[in-house]
Image (tube, rainbow, N blue to C red):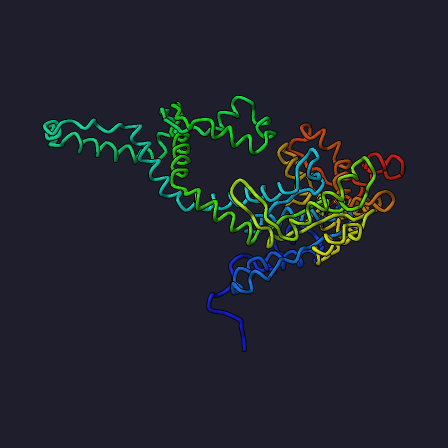
Length: 465
Ligand SMILES: Nc1ncnc2c1ncn2[C@@H]1O[C@H](COP(=O)(O)OP(=O)(O)OP(=O)(O)O)[C@@H](O)[C@H]1O
Ligand SMILES: [Mg+2]
């Protein structure tokens, strides 16, 4: 008997293969890690299709990515977050402190994830009501540009002008013409006076500055928001600006925040993903009376219930964390996963190791990714009218030098490429404005020349590269 169900067609969202393909555009190598996260991501969507009775039993298989520094752990997370069509939060485990200490408590990661979920659902719904909101905004804009005639008395309305049109008919014709000019963008820079609803926080920001607002705790912000009456404010804006502002306001009116909140909570609980970076930094069971160790184990103990599945109160409602997927990553260079408290270790059944990178990977990293360093530098200098060209042997030399420095000193992975490139291109970068219209060829000789002093002197290289 088969339980494979083809009636619903294929699952939506990217397949593991497609996910890996996208990751491949930015991260060289690390195939095992890419596969594992791709499967985990896909499993989120699979689970939604599992018959309800069984669905609750399918808990996510949390992952730990282990690998030396600078080999792509955080990069994988960054790219994954754009791919995942689920609420995705990336946090540094080190930013949390034990409950009772100054700092962020671990539950705040769930609150942050809810905010992300809300943003996601809200923008989807905003897109849905977009056309309607745009229509309404346009009508309001037309009312502003061409105020409708006052509802005059009947006699007045029936008075026809030379063309035989009533004032209403005349107005309608003028409005149609105005609409045409508006749509053609003719009026974009003309000014109009608009009444816009101002949200509370916008005003608070005005008083204390954006930075201060960010530091304010969520609760306080919320409270102030509610205390501030929603005021209408008259502002002079260009037609283009007014259109945007009115559209925003109409969208706001059309959205059902209650429904959006419910959907967001549901989505966070069913398919949320939290990426815990720098996870190794909270390993260790220091019990010393002071120093950072105090809270390490405490943070682990605080994280445990969240990973195991518990209910966290957020201002939008309770969130059950049973099915949130956790992906942890860390160098685990001087600590091992075994240094985590055993209960927590058990909640991360999947382990994957990332490989350290050598000259072959470096060569590819330099040229292949969509955001490859050589592409970045070329684009940067192109703005100065300088044509920066990397020859294959120049690339080889950069990659080999970086690998050598990593071997001799500390292995900082692909980050070494950044320091080496900076060094090689320092002079060019400085003199670029004088090189307008010229071509600069980065070949082996060029690279060797620029690195000569530092590579020869090991002590110097420690400081500079
Ligand atoms: N495999 C790779 N392919 C392409 N670029 C890479 C790769 N590994 C690292 N990089 C680049 O090197 C830099 C550092 O990588 P990343 O932040 O992912 O390191 P990490 O593994 O998280 O290290 P750490 O343990 O120190 O946090 C980034 O600019 C990233 O783009
Ligand atoms: Mg990292």
